[in-house]
Image (tube, rainbow, N blue to C red; front, side, top):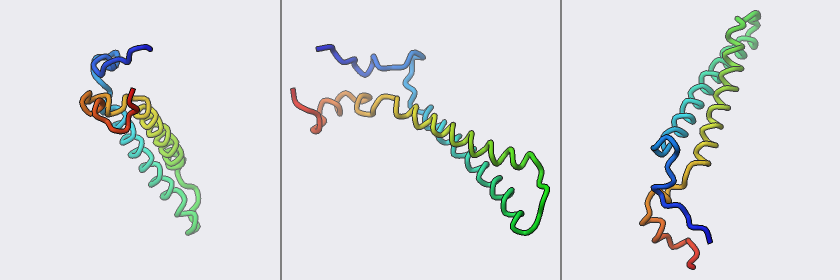
Amino acid sequence: MPSTPTPSEQVEPGGEPAAGRPDRLVGAGCVLFGIGLIAAAVAVIPFFFGVRNLPTWLNAVAGGGLTLGFAVALAGVLAAVRSRIPEEADPELYRTNPHLPVD
């Protein structure tokens, strides 16, 4: 049976665990998505009042903000899923976990 690496061996190649990177990506994606959502509302609501010929950049910010925000947040979620689980960061918690199968 292959031995499982210890938590100290499960550090990323850069030397430090990437604990905050997924959180920052999700936060940045939410901000971008929010900007795109506001721009989409600003671009759509005037059409109900008969306004035409809105600037092209407004439509680009609306579409790009929503798309890029969603993509960045999704990348952050995927990075968080691929990162190590919290139990592996604390060996004592991992050894005393009552939900693990006993050998």
